[in-house]
Image 1 (cartoon, one colour):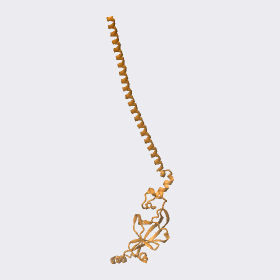
Image 2 (tube, rainbow, N blue to C red; image 1 turned 90 degrees about the horizontal axis):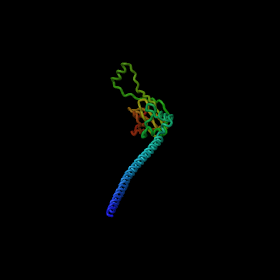
Image 3 (spheres, rainbow, N blue to C red; image 1 turned 30 degrees about the vertical axis):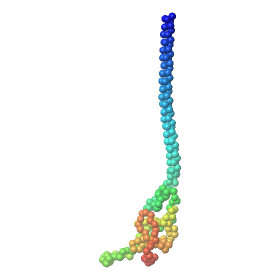
Image 4 (cartoon, rainbow, N blue to C red; image 1 turned 135 degrees about the vertical axis):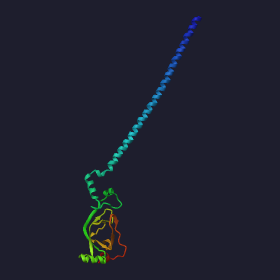
Length: 232
């Protein structure tokens, strides 16, 4: 009896040890499995967040690219029709050809407006009185037989332009004068008096000076008479 009871106690103790080991194994496996899954869930979550972030960046970038392409398409009307573009470029020549530097607007804005219109052009010969010669110069001319005229002539090619901005002014070189805003060109003429050229227009006189930029026409303020300027 005592031997059998002792053997039963040993068997019972072995079973408890086995059960304890088995339970410990399952508990340990459960903890390891839970930790492993937790790390996997974190990795999966981070991966998903990265994918979503990349997708979001690509979507916004493509949206900007599309918007940029649409903006480029809307801001490039000059290249849609090369023929029209060439005509516009041909209309804005330098001062040596036709006037292009209108005041207060850029070249691109000039294209968007109605172009300047040439309404009249003609050649004008202006009598320029010579400066009085000294006595020695007159004697030398008489000895050499030079017949001096009392005046020289200055020839200008004069153009009258109509501006869409209704500008009133001029540009002037040694051989060309371009007027803006002189609508009744038949009433316009050029005179010279005491070293200054004048535009005579509608009973007013406007002093002129050589300039390659636009200048406004300002009437003569000094009480110079019509006959004084014309030299009559």
